[in-house]
Length: 260
Image (cartoon, rainbow, N blue to C red; front, side):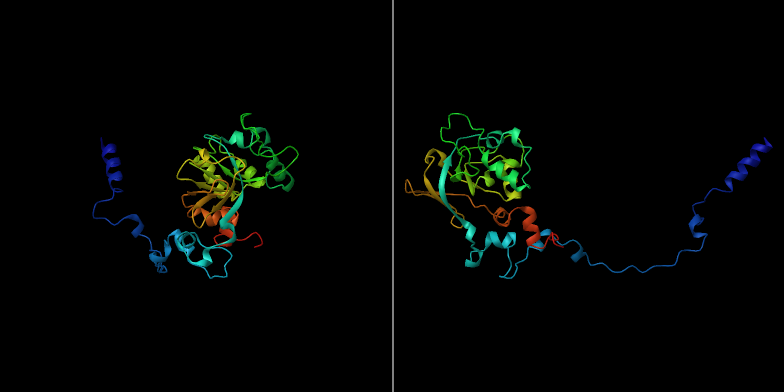
């Protein structure tokens, strides 16, 4: 009993009473260090602050100014496309645009990129009697594709817009897109995925001569004499014009150039 009392007494001597200073205060405190002041106004600048207007001599316009500017300087040579159109229907999937057997081709290799163009839209069913790319050719005479609803559905292969671009396609005009195809078109910068406000695919035929004017947001069918309103491409336009998301970021100074 005495031993128990002694042990209990020795333990209680190490308990920290509510009014006793903590152990850290027994030792000498560390010297105080004055931290530099931080301006939180500059610390969390929004990303859009990088997209401030650039001088007219810049090689590319920032996203916001390109979408909202109506000055002549904002108009570039790539805002109008003229050529023969190729018309397809609804639900054209990526396997019809470029079959899986050709996904081993590497777009960064110039020779293989060229081959990708020769296989563009070769997966279309036999009901499409006119071939998009003639046998033995690497590019198509059809520079504008007109489609229906849900163009580019299926797998998320980036080869789909790349194959179209390699075949010489400048723009696709469809009623709607699968989101992943639209995104891949912008990120690769291969084709302009433009949306129509009506089903142009039911009023145009393969072989019609058309003009796409990005600045005016319209498609003109010179064969029929009809014009159609297109939805604005918006902030995606300058990215595609630059050649893709990484090319845009380099030209806008967001990331270091390859030469750096």
